[in-house]
Image (cartoon, rainbow, N blue to C red; front, top):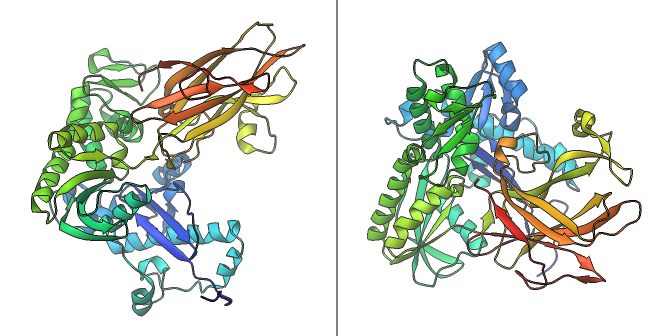
Length: 516
């Protein structure tokens, strides 16, 4: 094989337009690794003339929401669901913008994704500026300007079936079954639950062994169930007009954190002044019974179980494994309920080991006067014992979102603590925080605090060193066993890392778990 000596290079763009969140990734032929999680809300705002005013992440900003109310903009969301057949479920969806078809809206949104990817590549990748020479006059009617005509579309655009994409995702995350046996993939998304069944003789050759199924009962319908319940609960109260806002708060944080029907659930929506004991509202939080919240999920859970049983019965090969993927698949409650049911059916059930949460520690960071986020918090600036200006409330990520984990892989970050006291033994206390929101790179504890509950605290005594003040350096280490998070601290003494236990060569730590 001879090396390529041409002057041009092809670029592959992959669009994933979801009901609630979307993404676009790119790859040059021969590229080994492609990057992590970069989802953006599937939302558009149109003005009264039908012009797009905001899209994606920008459309989710508070200033845009205020501007939309002020100018009467139309919010387009969940529009992908209008591509399906007309039925009773579709009649419950938010309407399309005036004088716009679902194809129009989809085209506008894909144009936004395409343009965002183009700008990103131009600004961050060597040779990306060459894209500036591409023709900007692509027809907007053909998939948002991606191509110029139908002939071009046929040659340059390929649609990947949901099941095929999910299968490749599972293979990439090492979820492999024995040759000849069948695997059923449940892709639980925002709008739909898609199920597909495959069997293969190798990791590269698979065939479909049962008709695929698609059900309009994804996570947005859990939110709709919650909204209907909250509206009924608050009817005729002074909080009746807040029902939609409370449901939105449920969707952004409570829904993903919910995991136990036997425990009450809290939706933070207001301020400490919001009180109504009769409605279960205390300090701006609405208290709901766990059984009520479970009922929001139950239609989706039961639908998935029925579909699995049907597809298993119809499969040409015996189904031995079920893999759960998709954004809704990150729900611990959904996973636990499906696991209980499928274990009774003697099916192996699991999720890919790609972590969907962000773990880290709260700490200080060196003050940077050129950083707008630092300047905004300048009132909190202080000098630490070594005399360095720092800011508190920084979220230091140890395990990033969408990071592939395994039982033996560890994630480590280094920290330093100072003290004026001359202790014979320095006590390290470090809270492990778990961010459960949508920001792929959270940086501050005060930005989305409702989505950063404490998971556990790691406490360890170790010597401190110094004269005018005392310091100790240590590492926080996270690992994920078969069932749970393990956290330790490690430090150096006399040139050696202390070793007593939980993991070989690591010191013991006291782990104090909180409910999350």
